[in-house]
Length: 147
Image 1: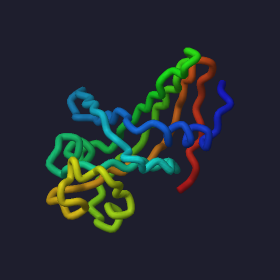
Image 2: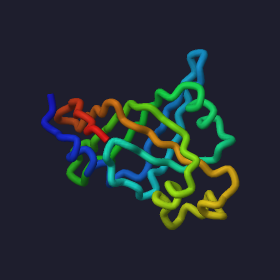
Image 3: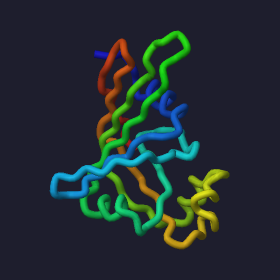
Image 4: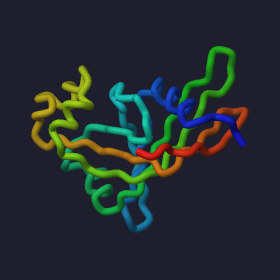
């Protein structure tokens, strides 16, 4: 088993912009797509992503809230494998403009041209229930802090 702590993994996640979000579409179908944490990386067990309300991922989360996130760090210059982090949790759809403003970062206008006032904008909040990792030398599960 590994020796990493939740704080160790949070510092790794902070450096990884994109992850893969997997949702359950029902009838045995899993959908996976890349998502950006948009630099919102003070990881405390909750991940936040902007989206549009009329997407398949939102309808899937509304139906079945069990999701997974996978983060992958590139190998280092000496060839040591990067870390792989798998987070399982529950997703919820957030429609609170104050939270949009709290998590908004410059550059999101590329996808949401009217900022937090973009019609149909929502956020996905993923609250972790378990966090696993593999780094080429060790692997393990860390406890998620109470929030």
